[in-house]
Image (cartoon, rainbow, N blue to C red; front, side):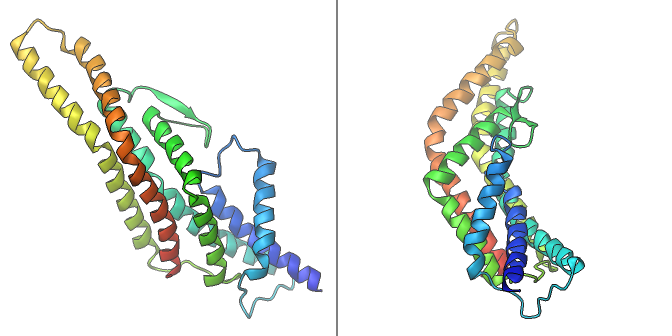
Length: 253
């Protein structure tokens, strides 16, 4: 009987952990073998199972009860995973804005994470963020936050409430603000380049502005990259920490 209860708890822990990590952009990459993902989630679920909190009235008498609690845990995991996904969406917003300004909007690259097409700059920002995610030990903070969810929100308890829409809206607003701030140097420099091209076209009416403008924007954009990338380090690390803080805020901690 004890073994059966432990198996039920392990299944419910596994379901929530799976829902969280499948929405984590740094984990659900298709380049990672599925068996490796399942093995990692199972191993992590197994070692944290002794410390999870369980509702006092949690009773599983049949498969219908088990299915009900599995759905509840999956919804809880999706709620936390969606926080991570929204928090890190600033890289796509900033990458799209940068590409539209420097002339790379017409070109996209294949994203192995979800087999979609994403801007070149967004892909570069995502790789940069992934590197910082492990260098700064942000993955440890994320796992600690996930473990904390099992203590604050016991197994079998539902997390969804009326303030979720407002909370997710605030996260989206923060992602948009950070994305625009990261792209601001490129927007400003390309604006200056466009003003210079406009003045040159007035001074030299025979100059082909379109022929000169595209390579000039690319050159200005690459130079801007060399200047500002060193300053993006702190901004990206701050967003990784804010991602974890958002999870704690969702729990009310």
